[in-house]
Image (cartoon, rainbow, N blue to C red; front, side, top):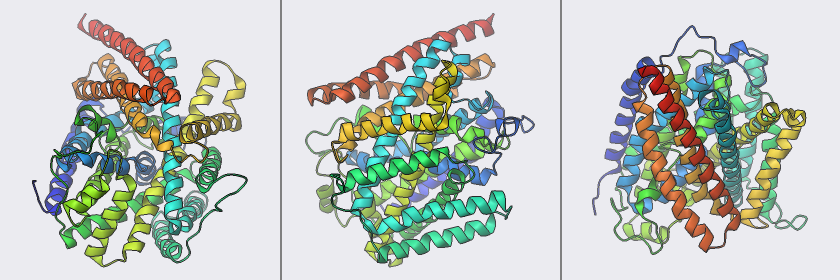
Length: 558
């Protein structure tokens, strides 16, 4: 077993990801996307102070970063470590620089250049009208999976860690106060940030002293089902509020909290100097563990590359971009932040245990680990580094994870509303363009899937995770393909988006086919149907896009 000090891993990861931002993102910004500081962004041209709001790049970075982060860059790496820490580490670092950064940055740029339309909607202009319809079906199904999975994750964490309940819900009030102070009372950003951060950490201590739980039974519903309903009720309301009142400030203050959380975890690693006990390459994986290739590349989606990021970038972020050059800061740096979270997760679940035996006890089968392993390993590192009580450290990490999942749900339900409303506009169905109607349809579909896959209490909803990862990566490939067609039509180099597109798409298709077999043999017929629809739709969009790509190249060559 290759053993090393976790500090070495931190230094290598942080240095390489930082160099990627300084040099590679600058190259992409100047030579490929060619950002124009004088271009009027949709946030100004279409300003309505509800969805289209010119936003300070630091605040927008906070929204974008926490909306795309969620719990996925924790859950994915914490599961994928079962194959060893080296494959997970390499995929996170290289994926952040050459895959996720280019993808996230590009989706914002493409949307801003097309009146802030979603990546699905602008496919109609870039590729074809038929591909737009098919692509939007893929997006809607992915959002269904994202929202259902994150609701199940959050419900489970709120049940398992009652001390996180007060801090998680207090963050909503803190965010709304910050939104009013900044946008209505015109208070500078510094003091609301400082005060909001202090309050957030104070209520973490309060939650540790006063844990709260929902009843064991209410109207025949268990705790898991109750939390899922509460979470979707909140997400539905939040999705209809102006972005300045909740979405922006909530994501921003959560972004500040994540920076502090990352600083604490990285600082604790430097102080505690833990040794990595997980195997570098695990040659003794538990029975039933799928092969590393292709499953690693869909198990770790967020933290390396994720199609959901393109939905956020082209759905909410592009509507708030103040200046086009801010897209590099928001998009590529947002990917760096998520990569850093995935990196610290790898360290927590590989160096946060006392021995290899303890690690193997947690990773006794594929799918084990996840948030539980992150909390356990991370809390041990925080305790050893700073002397914090393990229970308090677990509360702190749970709050961090649940708040990120919550911001993803906020953005996810809002994005689903946008998709329904775009369908209403495209197919001239006025009822679907109504905010309330579109939100009810979005939330209702999510609830059906959460309970349909997870049972009456929703506890089995994590069955959706592998399908979410595969669909997510297929969408990332489709997004990169659309961006590539745009670049070719503009006469710019497309290999920087096409190469990662080919790789991630190949891994996702292989995974989808393997999962299709497994879902069928285990009788998960609803998920089989969703998987088949996504595969067929993705193939159709790719054929259309490939045709458009070749046509664009022929035009440029003639």
